[in-house]
View (cartoon, helix red, strand yellow):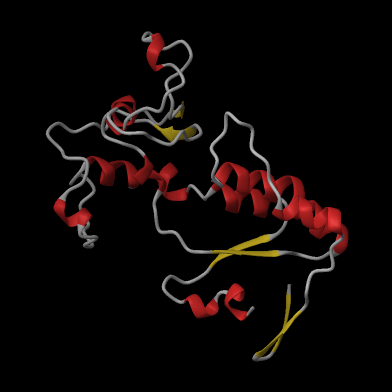
Length: 202
């Protein structure tokens, strides 16, 4: 925690009991889970431990959570086909060509005709096809998008089409939604400026 006074920053070490420190820093996975730290573990830790401890220690205060910056768009986690492992994402809503609000699962529904695909992530072609936005003969990424060149084209590749959709543009990271819904602030450090990270002060 820090108090800002003009250009100076006064660091205040957290005063936590032994049990509270264990809650924050010690985790134990089930043997069927991954052995590494994932966003699922982080969200659970923030929701069940970090926010309640902060609010108990600092009444009527607002916490500022700071994280390393990540410019990976959500759509980057969707593959063109089924050949590679893909993250499972939550459902979304969009306006179809008839101006109707539609709910779209990004995983195959439990009543999908192919029982082997139920509960598995949809590939990007399937997502676009359900929205009637699929364009034939387009690559997953075009050369300009691969080189991160600015372009006004939105139909140059499959990924650009879907990333231009309003629901994907407006979607916040799950960690931001969780923290803001609890009444706190979530910020991200500038890329390539490690000196701004508080952890570098210790």
